[in-house]
Length: 274
Image (tube, rainbow, N blue to C red; front, side, top):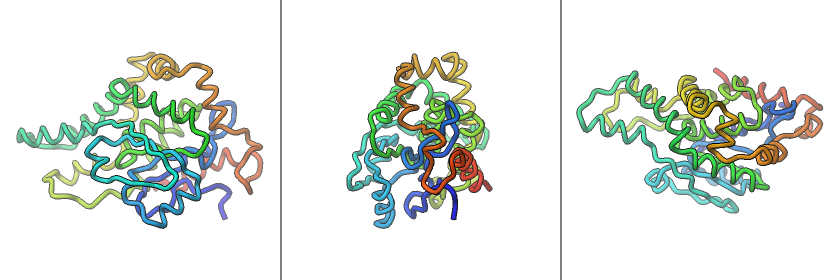
């Protein structure tokens, strides 16, 4: 028996569905378990998967997928309201242009495109992340946010949320990289893209998230200014966010000794590392 809930939920149709709870944040408080979830797309959920999510009390799904992605894998969950925060997959579009022009695809080229994507998320898609925080501030029930694979758009979103809650950057990076341990990429298609290039596309790298966070620093003077000036989060809003999603050590998960819930967040994460 573990002393914390499962971080990675055992779903058949979404292998990257994860709880953001348990991490230590501002003032020694920890992120609430079973309130904030990140995931890959929910279009392949089984009947059993939907029952698992219903038991969580999930009521709001925030979808970062682009228009074509959403149309290709729609979903409906009883009791869950879906909200589109569409961010179009520019890396895919850029790859298609390169292939149409007869340009050879290589790991360095695709890695550069991925880093460019993360930098663009910071500025070009700031309005979507502002919307994300608006939803989180409004929600009184569990929330999931997702894209297609739950790694890039969702990965940056999760990093912003955890950092805003005071989770150390090193722990945030570990949570981000956990995708590589749990996400099951789809079978290879007939697209003519080399396997080593696809491996870059379907996995995450520390350098990708670093590129985004470096853009936050270089373009906005740091996380605090980015949250305040670019995403429009006042000090009162950030305090409300912390009040909603952080708990004191004594408000632990049932069955967990006071103080253990905070440490168990890191333990739950590291148990999946491989």
